[in-house]
Image 1 (tube, rainbow, N blue to C red):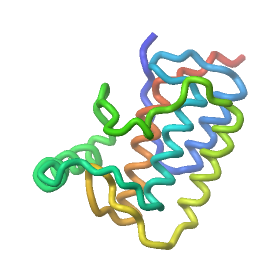
Image 2 (image 1 turned 90 degrees about the vertical axis):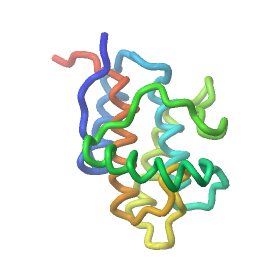
Image 3 (image 1 turned 45 degrees about the vertical axis):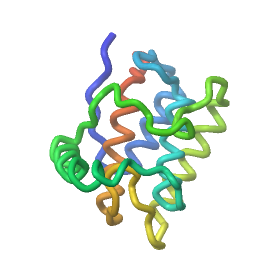
Image 4 (image 1 turned 30 degrees about the vertical axis):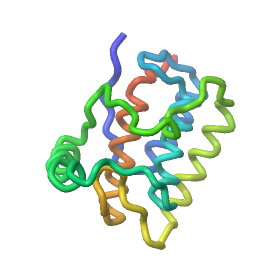
Length: 153
């Protein structure tokens, strides 16, 4: 089984998809289950609003990241197999799916209402709210595409 094609255009679409996966079940074609995926995505959402001391080297953020950001925003795809730069981004093996889904949904809601200064992205650097929103949508698309919903009849 292969991952599926997704392209979330709104945070509501992410929430609806998570609800569908939780209600009908899914086949996992990647490394993480729904709880782990939600835990990872939540860490990134929260990290966009809070100071997180994880940063790619200056030279990468200055010379590589701008090109990578343009490519990701244009293609609406993230590359597969990127190694996590910090262990705090990796989900735990024994997560409570219901709790993580709830926490992730809350982080989406908090981000949507957030009007403070956003944190720099660890790789892309300074992003405005719209850029952060697009990165969150694309990042969520990427990870949730590895969870294929069971057929519903």
